Amino acid sequence: MESEKVGEEETVIVGDYVEIMKTEGKSNGMKSKFSKLFWHGGSVYDAWFSCASNQVAQVLLTLPYSFSQLGMLSGILLQLFYGLLGSWTAYIISILYVEYRTRKEREKVDFRNHVIQWFEVLDGLLGKHWRNVGLAFNCTFLLFGSVIQLIACASNIYYINDNLDKRTWTYIFGACCATTVFIPSFHNYRIWSFLGLLMTTYTAWYLTIASLLHGQVEGVQHTGPTKLVLYFTGATNILYTFGGHAVTVEIMHAMWKPQRFKAIYLIATLYVMTLTLPSAAAVYWAFGDMLLNHSNAFSLLPRTTFRDMAFITFGFACTPLYFVWEKAIGMHECKSLCKRAAARLPVVIPIWFLAIIFPFFGPINSTVGSLLVSFTVYIIPALAHIFTFRSATARENAVDQPPKYFGRWVGTFTINAFIVVWVLIVGFGFGGWASMVNFIDQIDTFGFFTKCYQCPPPSVAVSPPSHGLNTTAAAPLHQPFNHTRRH
Image 1: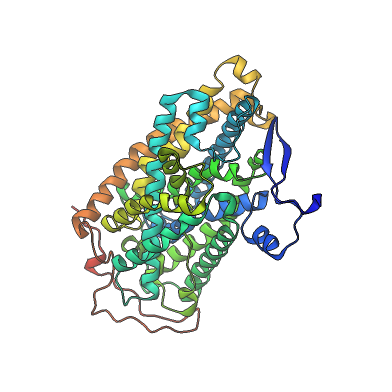
Image 2: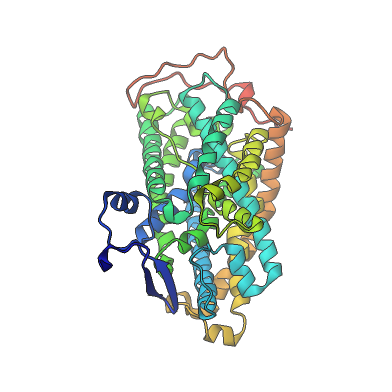
């Protein structure tokens, strides 16, 4: 019967272009229902979960560290500021994606077995030079974003089980990271993104409540900001936090109706701020300047069952890299999941290796933020929008006209120009200088391939697990092994 057909084609009008997609038919089998519930996601809600869970992730644990560098007021204001900037450039990326896809759909290009990526959008709208620059920045950022996620997982699990050092945990989680090769695309991240956001939410509120119940440590000081190097290092970590939309195009492409993405990132950002602001402020209030030498907030909180349950998932940044690699070796349109998974495995190796070389959770975030995120998700999208619609003809024929409350084209170009100048000077310029100074200090102090970054020496006793959220622990010591060298 017609209702039992699976794989029927359905034509759906999306904005001003036609999207042809595969439907799952009307099959009511248990396998089909299970797959639809946990595996196939292309709704607005799926996109929101993906954006919210991918946006902050493990950086949540380093935001109190950034507050100690910035001070409470600057930390709060910069979160709000970069949250708005990130939402704007995500909006700009979505406009450019729709413009590109509309033009290609009018040319009868079929994307059913192809995932559109940011560098292809740049290529289609502005040419190969823009494509090459976008590809270089985007791939490098996603590579180090995956490295940071892996480092964070090893750091977090160490505070749950310190029988193994952080490097060994990195080996273990590198193997776990390899399992993401079996996830075909962001269309199949439904359960993963839901769990990711659930755990991020739990972790944020655990940090907030545990810090408030713990109270301020004796003699707590809140002296930040004290040095320009520390100030701009903290600022670029926040810039990195709200620059997680390097995967925006892939998330949009996984949606049934991509034109509905425009406000999703802003709503996701507003939700994320309900997690980042209270948690960072509460931990900084409780521990103050001690955070300057403890980039992972878990290291200062007493070990409890509640803390051990706080874990954040990973894997989002790997998937776009898999797509790029598949396209490079001609495997992207292969319909065999096993063959594609095998082809993706080489991508995991450099992620694993770099995480072992540079295990500097916290400082590496700021370095990636200033040198890569500043261009990948702020400067290049803003400039690309300006150059794509610089002619009157392009503006007249644009699929999406800027809304009146943004000041139409003049207002949009003005906002884009401000972002380019601000991020270039403050994010890349001052931020790059500060984060590189701090990063080099970590190398000088700990060296490459350090076995256990910022770990307490074996002689320091660790309190046994308990079952209370507000268990009182001895105040963590300000020990030499945790200090960043100051020249």
